[in-house]
Image 1 (tube, one colour):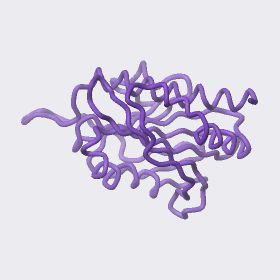
Image 2 (tube, rainbow, N blue to C red):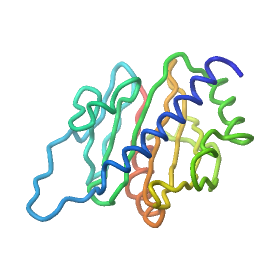
Image 3 (cartoon, rainbow, N blue to C red):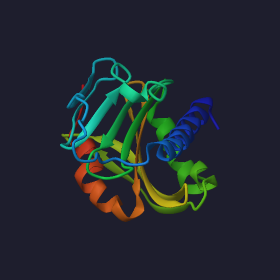
Length: 199
């Protein structure tokens, strides 16, 4: 296994483990009556990463530049955290890793087909694994991996979308409580990928 592929596997497993840990800390997405919602950006735009995303409605965006309460999370390549204000425990997190190629992405797909690192998580069950096209132009090939795990006793569904852009490898990890995953995927996760623009 190449050093770059090992870095990608560590990147993905690290994102999942941090997401599982955050789920334990968060406790809920919605706000009670009378509670103010903090102002956060409605667009993610990075000249460095060459990615632009218009956020769907009903989300809070946190970035490495404006981390808010996720200052300790948005480090080591993690550059984006999106919280849903509609669905409890529904999150999108993104991490970039330098010096990745399409060959590394194909190697990662092979690992997911044969021995996914996520299989070590409690209650792991593969739902689907396929390649898709993402972005406003539907021109960026990506790996789309959906699986279920037990997170603090709650059945949770993860959707990981991995792709290469420029010389960076990206992993977007979406998670939601299992019963709400379909709704969250339609109203948040899929919109993030369909609104993504590559520079």
